[in-house]
Structure formats: structure tokens, C-alpha cells
Length: 207
Image 1 (cartoon, rainbow, N blue to C red):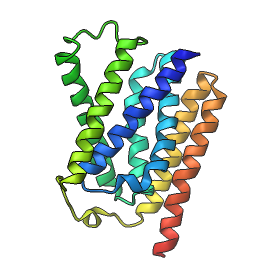
Image 2: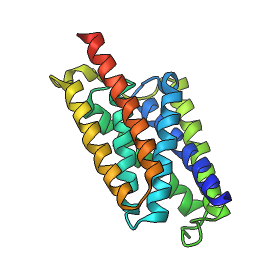
Image 3: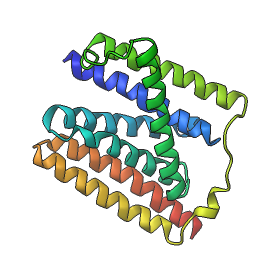
């Protein structure tokens, strides 16, 4: 029981730290969408744990996480889909870079005993704390990139986003079904419902 709890706790901290980092770098108000980000973080980490434990598709977890971050930025934060993709990839990769630096400097590059261990949890906690601090520093001193995101907004973008969400979540649900993980399908359906709600809500507001 402790291992799934530990994984979800520290991985959710990592996901939230990555979210605040990516929004800080691009001068977005991530704190205004913290609850939605927390919900999505729980979803992505639950699926990451199940993929890791129940299937041989663990390499898909980062890709799914980037997709979920992209949908979160596009539907909730209202960033155009192209910029959402760029911001998500940048945030996840930068978080990974910080963790790699800590792995080399603090843990001497030894990653063999980190998975499912207190040392792995410590690495996650240290990385998250450092990234949260970095994000706060960027927000506090207004350091980051500012772009006119609307210039890259495509026509019919909300429809495109909605279709992409349905396709991505359907593909994920198929993978989970193959692993006989019905509960995860329910969680993905909830996530899809949230994304679609925000996408359609924004479309109605602009219409």
C-alpha cells in the first residue's frame, strides 16, 4: 500500500512543479489554475503508475504526460494549441534537466537503486522543491518570455482540440483496456470530460 501512495504523492509534486515552471517561464498565471492542474496531475500519475506496473509500455508515460499538459494549457489556461505543445515540452524537459543535474551532483549519477526506494523519493522531493523555488523566483522578479500567443491560434482550433482530446483519450483507454484496468478508463473519461468542458465553454464564449 505504501508504494502506490508514495509514487502518487511524490509524482504529483513533480507534476505540479513542472506545471508551475512551464507557466512561470512563459509568464502565465499558473496559480489561477492550480486546482485543475492538481486534478490532471493525479490523473497522469495514476496512469503512469499503472503503465509502469501493469504493462511494458512505461516509455509512453512521458508522452501521455506531455499530451495532458498540452490539453490543460489549451483548454483551461487558454493558450493556442501550438504554443501549448511548445510550453509543455519545454516544461517537462527542463524539469528533467534539473533532476538530471541533481542526480549527477547529489546522487553521484547512481540511478540503479532509485526506483521504488527512499532515495528515489528523496530525488523527487529535492527536484520538486528546487523547481518550485525556481518558479517562485521567476514569478517574483517577472523573468520569462512573453509572446503574443494569439498570433498562432488556428481557425477552428477549439474543434481541433476537442477532436485531439477524444482521439488521445480513446487511444489511452484502449491501451488501459488491454491491461484490464477499468478504473483507469473511468479516470481518463473524467479527464476528457474536464478538457472538453473547458474547450466547448471557451468556444461558446467566443461565439
